[in-house]
Amino acid sequence: MKQIALSGIKPTGTLHIGNYLGMIKPAFDLIENFQTLYFVADYHALTTLKGKDTLNHNVYDVVATLLALGLDPQKVIFFRQSDIPEIFEFTWILNCFTAKGLLNRAHAYKAVADANLSVGKQPDADVNAGLYNYPVLMAADILLYGSHFVPVGQDQRQHVEIARDIALAVNNTCGEVLTVPEPLIQETVMTIPGIDGRKMSKNYNNTIPIFADAKALRKQVMRIVTDSRRPEDPKNPDECNVFNIFKYFAPPQTIDSRRNAYLSGELAYSEIKQELYELLNEFFGSRRDTYTKLLDDKNHLDRILNEGADKARAIAGPVLESMRRAVGIRR
Ligand code: TRP
Image (cartoon, rainbow, N blue to C red; front, side, top):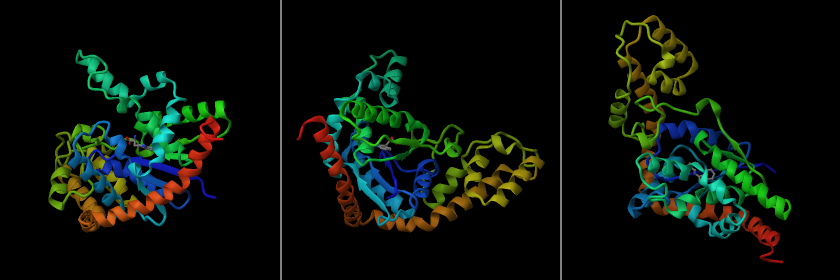
């Protein structure tokens, strides 16, 4: 039996190439060697996103994006978090084994509390209980399917560690009921720079969307911030935001030759930007039509999600059942 790798994507915005490199591609790379479960974490999105049309659109956007990028629902159990009712009973039981102090320190909540404090507000201003309990729901996502590994970006490491802590707390009290998961973090692509050089993130409005149309894609690439060195000046590729994206998409020989051209002053920023645009447009552009067609057929997407949910529930059912027995809710 293959070990289980599980990951969730929160549908809070259009997926960008930082998501692709940091999360989607590493997750795709696991498909051959693990039984993989990938899901759209719509209930997690609800902690911050209020607006039914946006949330609904975002869910299908994530689904269409992943399918267009080549996710094969025959190989991956691909589903929507909210299609699995078992998750709530399981979340409740886990809540009863979760130290409240653990949640005070969890970063999804703490980031908002700290931001409130920094502008002189009460730490809990505008904090809903869903945001506070975010890590418990995430632990339920992970533990309900007996996951061994959780591929996530660096920003989610703490949440996976909380899931570990909760699993250990349950096992210490109730016997070995739960599989204790481990985070799987790809160190090399931890932070993909955005067009302004900060980490690419929708919070900074500095992203390059995966399926932007060719014109928008080119415009965004041309906006990548560089210093003011002239075309003939030698440049440091490792300090260049353009190169730091380029190197993830170009073939190895091209990376070497462009690196040399930077160093010897034979490359203008405008040239490398054009090359990056062409690489991205070639890589993602061929799948853009598939994405648009998928997004237009929501019934088809629902069918795929429903099939995934059936498979996920088949794994979740027995885990929940043994949990109920272990705590004494059932004999
Ligand atoms: N919290 C994750 C994020 O914001 C999404 C997520 C929800 C998740 N449940 C999960 C990731 C379970 C891995 C495993 O990106």
